[in-house]
Image 1 (cartoon, rainbow, N blue to C red):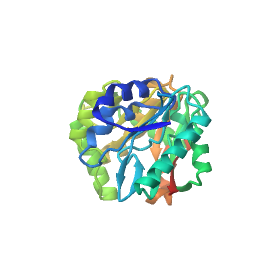
Image 2 (cartoon, helix red, strand yellow):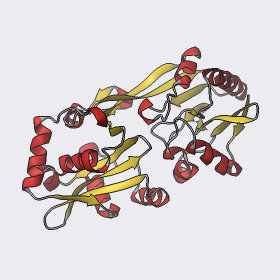
Image 3 (cartoon, rainbow, N blue to C red):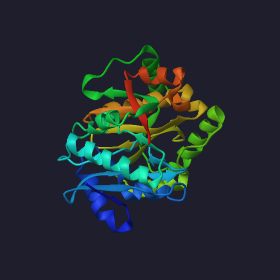
Length: 311
């Protein structure tokens, strides 16, 4: 087993591996990883077994801790179709020995949730168990299996009735500027924080990944934007990255309207619709009002787990 740190010369090899992997998504392409390169250093790794690329892992090092990767929602080992459990045990053993020699104290590992796997890909979870990894953070996301949808709650049905009564319209849009103002105002008022991505960053990413990042806006009958939802689309999942509405939009059912449109009109062919997490403080706090709204669409729990190996 050989481990090589990523360098720009590996870009084509890296991206091609992600494209053909069993659990990679567009978030692992180098153009996505590197959009926030100024905030995180990069110490991504490539693992070769008998000179064949077997796995990759985006990550960085800070204060003698290896993180996989600070700028991504998920992102442990990305594995090839041919990668076996024995391969992953070998590379994890090699990695931990190497890191100990380098003075690394811990590995903080973000597993890719199973809904994003193209093929079963939980060899890493077994290897983490073998290395006495501890589950240190568990966030709960709300997911709909689109082939087995649960009926909407009365609250969501009422929201849709309001939207139809108020003659709202939903359509795909490129107007991220207007939506980012709505989103930023919402987050500032409710949580005193800003979106994870700035307008400049999300505009850059949408330009780089126009087929994977799509925005759906809700307008009133005067064509004023009153809400919307930004989707990160992967092979099996439509993930709601950002959803927001103005006060008028909330009162008129804009959020219910756009989510219903995405589920039933835009992406009925996907395996999952993932409505995002509703936890804070490393998963120790559940925002019950937020998850109640998501569960009203029939969404149920998928966990996003983070493990720590003490070296």
